[in-house]
Length: 106
Ligand code: FES
Image (cartoon, rainbow, N blue to C red):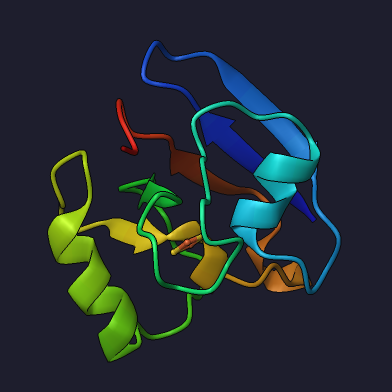
């Protein structure tokens, strides 16, 4: 499935991410900048923060309380569409998902 990562300056990377990999892993494996992912996907660092595109209609998993808590201490401000990209597993249903990389992660 293809995931689009949009940088703060508008530059987009469209990446084919393996099903089962997370949106975070898809970025890291493909050299997409701005997703730091210090904890490697353990939902404990908050440095894989992304903003899901406001027009998104793809089904995303519900937010676990741990993710919710971490999103309170991200470097860039939390918004209604904030998620931790390591908590978004890629499936065929997410093909075409667009996420926005925040200005800062640390
Ligand atoms: Fe650390 Fe997502 S990679 S919380």
